[in-house]
Length: 485
Image 1: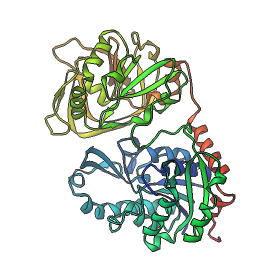
Image 2 (image 1 turned 180 degrees about the horizontal axis):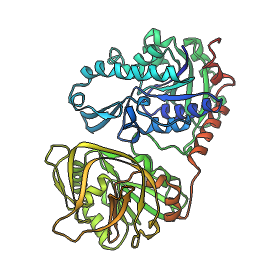
Image 3 (image 1 turned 45 degrees about the vertical axis):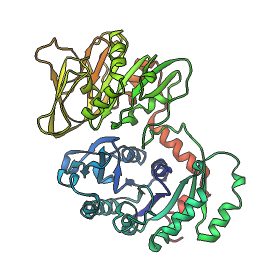
Image 4 (image 1 turned 60 degrees about the horizontal axis):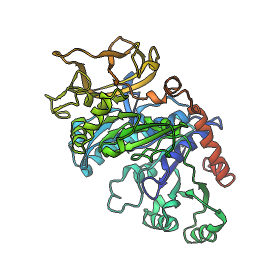
């Protein structure tokens, strides 16, 4: 093959596949190689707007977006050809090569997988033909025997790529050797033969105490343990799955982000978790909002449903009291829509609902999703958001809603415009709502609001590469792309 595919498999979801794949993208890119990430299918409401096919734009999972940046590449839709965005416990929106496919979204999972694999395989083979190294991320576990006949994310991809595979497990959960051995035994024999190493992730303590476990495991499987990675919480990458832990308590500014069931794009708040003197709280109850300096309503995959949940939890009264006291409230995308007067859905996209009434706006849901990345400009703003005035942040928009001032109420002030002059943000008193995702990833925004900055993202990627370089067995990473070995 003209390329060297490497695949990161896991014993479970959350074992560390995404993090490790990102680190390897930067490690191989630093060897002067042309590297691309790939994940056949991702399930996440954390998405980014990237280059689509034929000069269009599309969306992929945030993990592959960061992996592409780590590989020093422009992110594009082939790197994550299938993205599932959960809308309910048994329903997901299916995004294929960056675009929503409504027919597949309505189809049962087992039926649609046979239709999705050819699209994913085509993207994989194109990337393999164009790159020196393709770092492939699996999903969940490759040992789900009930899904083996349709598991294109792990098994079909491993076979098609003939990748050299690493199997990573989270030793902090306990039972790591059982997880590795059981996964090895349940994997199909042909894919099992592609395993070149086990990786113990998130280890705390003296690594010598692991003996003789790794040696015994190798005797039973023939596969060596090639790395024991220490616990490292502050690596700088956002967590891909679920809501990450709140930052440590203490003195300073408390930012409470409302964590509704279908929260989306939560990865954009990772920088707040890293800022000294800022306490990030994920709030699901009124008591978790009480005493917060800021309240943030983030994006949502199901705005009307999450708004109903917010009211059922009695969070609406706390948010309103916070705003009426002149304290900062920020809504981003779906959060902006909730802060308005009404959600109007004549196309069956999301749902009708009365808003929280803190911005004199009305949102109408349209069938076509708007995807846009670029730079915007803040207008002169009043307190408490005046520090953002005239800044020109870069970010992205992913939404069905189109928002306008309420026709019968005094319009809120326009707070943010895109480069075409279109209003994509409004301020009313202490309440600010914007459609632009990614504000807290912008150094100038962090400096304006918190008088602080963070490590540049490029330095984060280099730190990841340095970490795996230190903790993998010498020569392992080079051997994975050495076809003579």
